[in-house]
Amino acid sequence: MKNIMWKAAKCALFLALIFLSGSLSAQKKEFSGNPIFPGWYADPEAKIFGNEYWVYPTYSAPYHEQVFMDGFSSTDLVHWTKHSHVLDSSAVKWVKKALWAPAITQKDGKYYLFFGANDIHDDTKEIGGIGVAVADKPEGPFKDYLGKPLIGKIYNKAQPIDQFVFKDDDGQYYIIYGGWGQCNIAKLNNDFTGVVPFADGISYKNITPKDYVEGPVMFKRKGKYYLMWSEGGWTGPDYRVAYAIGNTPTGPFKRIATILKQDPAIATGAGHHSVINIPGTNEWYIVYHRRPLGETDGNHRVVCIDKMYFDKDGLIEPVKITNEGVEERKL
Ligand code: FUB
Image (tube, rainbow, N blue to C red):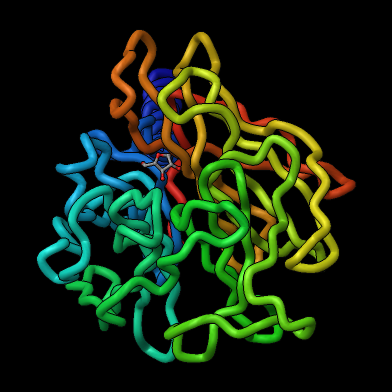
């Protein structure tokens, strides 16, 4: 009898161990790893459309090779699908090179992809600046929307590149952009064919914070407007991201701190980012590019993701850049 009971106990223990190890492995979540997809890409614009995450980066190559954009989608932040040439310069006649830093927004069933192109320096001699392409789906194909740049002139000494599109709670869309150390904001009109002046008659307001270089991003949290941007030179190791908080989309914006930068143990040149907030939660992610350790080619930039946290006063905590990336997160 004793022998039978002993055997039954051993059997129960064995079954319990199998059950425990099964449920532990079921709970084990995957990590994205960094970079999140292969290839040299930069300036990632991350967005949520429905139950999918999308990332639209710059193809990081010499300017004359930057004539298309790829998109990447995922349902869990871990497994990414590449969508080749969602935008191709063959669909935008005035684009010749330097197709940079996409920004995307969804409006009235259409997807609008804003981009910088041609790296213009003299708006009296060159065609280029910020353009818009439109598609019915996030994977495109995107077609030229205007047949010319949306912003093809240089206002307030800001190069027309690195645009970000921000929608306020009242439904107004703003475009925030600028290279050469100057940041402008303008109000987009209802159909994105141009900009409309602010109440004081000014169309392009300069909101440049201290140390701003390029790559602005805006979002709203608990009624406050956060302006983030990149500092330093994008080809160098100390490229980084800083931020300010304002009470209106036009600021004023006083620089608070650097929150993203190189880590000698992980990577250099961490910057030009975007931000994702899981709707209805306080879960935030920063999607950015960085350069692998030891790499010196300016274009060797890869797209990475890490968590972004706020403290109890709404300040952004310094981001810890990682090799692991983030845990699987379905929407
Ligand atoms: O990728 C081209 C340029 O590099 C972007 O426009 C800048 O912001 C920098 O990231």
